[in-house]
Length: 389
Image (cartoon, rainbow, N blue to C red; front, side, top):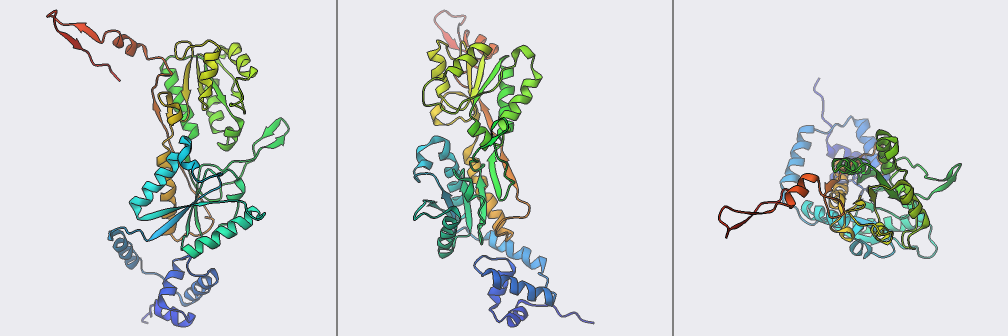
């Protein structure tokens, strides 16, 4: 018996639509209404339609070989007070720069859209309003970067492909031991810093520099946002050192209101020889205590950006994270995955270590630095020895 292959034309006649509509519906294209997509898929299933994998492969290759054109757009949706925050704040700038660069490389444009609470709209109404605007512009890919309000991530972004940068800020709740972070299962695909790895990398480099008592000044607000990753890595390291060199974490929440007494008590009690931190004000506090950096105490920052230029610490590579979020969107769209995925993935971008002026040099570097100028055999000639990096 000769088996009759089911064609797109056949399905189109049964569904009463154009062949192109059938093709888009079977690829789950968001331009086709959901009800129409489901109806066409059901007709195709009943008719026993199966796509030809060889044809699909050649079509994908043909699309890939075409030069990129600025024909599609993604939305960068922010709930920060002003869109210029992504340019003014050095700890935000890299994410947007990386996303813009990747969009340019892949032939997309990136539109910045600001969420503003108007007319008393709640979060669901705001999202519905934005989605309506996105559909009118033909935008189906959405980036939710480092949101201040968790509620926007919890919404169902229908007919959109979503990628989240970092973890949205989670409001703490009152637990049995005080403030406790709330846990939310992952809904959308995420591109994020590998904070656990970055802390381990920082600690290992400090140990290599012969620091013994490593302290950590942090914020519970930031720790909650990172799901405790930095705290977990630090506490793991503390278990591996001698008990006399263990230093508990100092959690502070207000860094702009002057040096708190708790900082003085913590430093005087444990006398760390190096401090891992995020806020550059820690250096000012140490100077106020009469401590020299790095002679008396070293500093390592977990997020090296412009406001801590010259410090030692971790470069989180925000540009790479922004680019990775675009890659997640493109991948989902290429697989026709619209809406909340069943098995969302998470890309962790590891940071890299950078030496800086806030840490003492290794002994071998210090020895070389003192002999960078030597007298050559002829008294009138002075040569420069290279300083090893």
